[in-house]
Length: 474
Image (cartoon, rainbow, N blue to C red; front, top):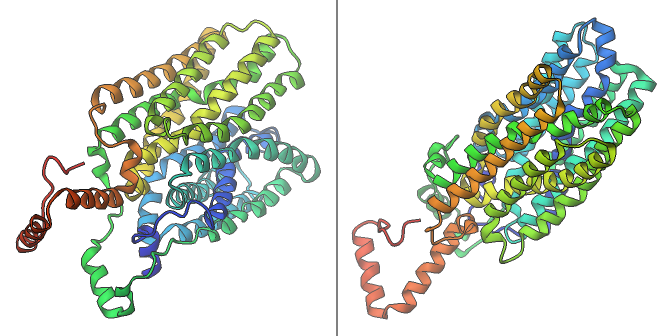
């Protein structure tokens, strides 16, 4: 239990902003890549699955949908497991599940088996790796956290550029069964990444020299951590973020799904059309870390939520303008600007959430947010597909996606400005609340005289503690 306690709560350990944190960042980079790119990489094998099991494309498309549903929908379960057992053991078990699912899938005799193995088991394994890796990244980085988030988010486009061609090679050389088996072995690297997630250890003090007193003090100080902290919904900023992010996800993933088909509809060959995704992914790789650097600037970081709103507005406007594309050149320009805005959104979405709820509640907050987004992820692309079937025009698909993302940007910016503009503490103040409260206490002691300070402390001891008043509550 001692290791678990240190993992769930760093026990006063300050984020090192480097050191072993770079190893944690490397692990998070790989996990993010697997989590987001794997559902798309599996689609390379769909034609072989259609031939093998005699099903339609819509039936095989459920494999990727179930993978994404497990990644998002199991958020609360991941939060409970992390708060109970810690990040490292959860990730190690998750790596085994992710690998086991693909290995079992290679022996499947029906598409239902693929749903259960690749979709459910591998999807659960990736979920058990993705969320804890972000939690550990949040604990190891504070001042450099925007940059760290940008670099880890870049794992998604990098992995997509690598896994999709790898899947094609494996399918050509070994068939879909051999490809699934090799990919299952590749996913064992999730266990390696999990082993990198070393819990932070608080620095030793004089009290630690006496083990009995130290244990008693920790037992008195530390209330038992909640398995899932629903108190985050009392935070107005968190509620606004959750609503805006859920609306955003409805349209965010639609253009990358349909842009290749859009180009084919205009009469361009398959190879030339597929190049559009390569352009988008290449721009995305550089946009994410650069946006992380921008978000880390002193005058930008306190207003990071508005930078996130701008990124969503930029993305939605790009969709609206791209809907009017009539030739290949226009689509290339669309993919360039979409790659920039998409990368900005990817780099900022979890950075903003970390800034809103702070380190202590992030493990619960991210699970609840992902659960809300799971519904939108399942509704968004299929809904756009139905609109395409009804209208037979890609223009309306891109217009719908653009409107949804623009609305989410307006909701986030407007509600934050109207509801939270009077907040005295900047967003990042929440993550270091204990230190800032201490700093505030030091400032108070310097303003008061020595006698007033002693009298204040004696009254606090007699009353058994001081309840925060309106001026001191956050």
